[in-house]
Length: 121
Image (cartoon, rainbow, N blue to C red; front, side):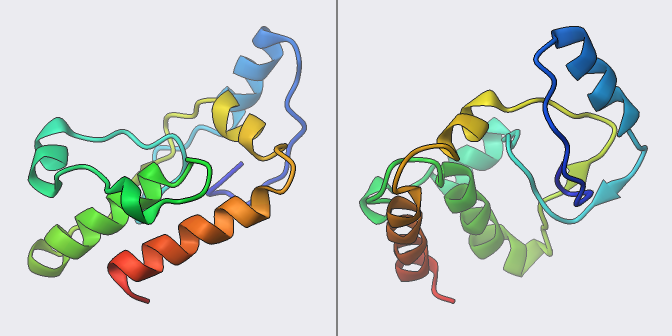
C-alpha cells in the first residue's frame, strides 16, 4: 500500500477488497505519486504527452515520464510537485499484473535509462 509503506495481501473477494481499501483512507495530501496517476488535460497539453522514443522497454513508465515532464517543464518555474491524496485508494490491477512478467527488470532498466537520457539525473 504505497505511499503508506504497508504490505497487504490483496483479497480475491471484491467486497473484502473495498473494505481493505476503506481502512487506509486518510484526509492527507503528500508530495509524491503512486499509480494510477490522474492527469489534468490542460497540463498534458502544455507538456505534450510522453515521448515513446525514450521508453524502449515494455510500457509502464508513461506516468513516470509525464510526471518528470511536469516537474521539468512546470516545477522549476511554478514549484509544482505531484500530490497524492490519501482519501482515495484504488486497486490498480494492470500495474500488479505487470509486476509478474518474466524478465521485467530488463524492460524496467531500458525505460529507466530512457528517462535518464531524456531528463538527466
